[in-house]
Length: 407
Image (cartoon, rainbow, N blue to C red; front, side, top):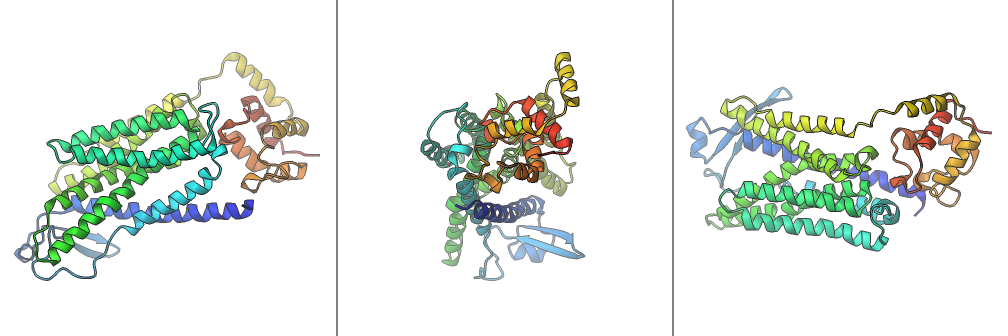
């Protein structure tokens, strides 16, 4: 595909994915907040109508009164025009899968594979990445089916799912390039969330509505299952978001224990999310907001900051860096680095991201992008496939900061 059109496709798919994800997560957060903020109706009129919970809210200069019926209204038949919250979920997954296909599956040799991690063919890496999404859902669903209805089932399921996520994170980081592994684990959880909606939440709601309209008492198992999967989804949201964002930061996924970094990031997200869920319940019950979980999640993040901090340079390294800092960086030196480390993907024939660097004019034109991607973010070369060194990154930095001169 033409590089220019490919970039447009990438942008539009990413934009659509972000928009639909905002709609889905926003809807999920709102309904979780609503469920946890309901109080018993105060008026006899509401109770006689079958209202099980109510919430008063103020927003935008007006007041809102939300009522929840656990079964159906007693004062009227079930309306035909019901709002369903599922297209947000499906659209998020479809746009995300399309973006994953365009970015990673079509470029598996560059994006999925790091030969220093695991050397295999692009076809095998593609099959394995798709298998991750399917197998995770099947294992998770089996856990919920086997243990979800048992005594202390929520705790058992929670521990089992945690073990599943840790194992999947470790395995992904042993098979795929670090950046792809982080994204793949996020996509794995996001697929599980959408599958919960598609296979359990919406079908259960449809069965309950059909039974109510037929004058039958609905089977309570559908409500319990739907509630369980919905709660799981809300705890998955922040781990999924941080997994998706973290793959853009090379210093997170390039280390030896990158799988543990990913697990701790997602654990911090889940703990922080739990604090918000518990806060809504505490507010209704008149208790203080239990922020302890958010404090622990923040502490995990601070521990990561300390753990991943680069070690202080030795005296010899400082002296070498000081000498290099004052030494001028010539175009010829930078040209040699670019030809060896960058030109394989940015030349007259191949122009990844619509960037070519094979002439002095083009290198000058893209100097800032080269500096940002190679020196500041250290995301290029992708997966460091051409083994650029820190000294060569420093050379590019000195060349750029001194004016990026070319012949």
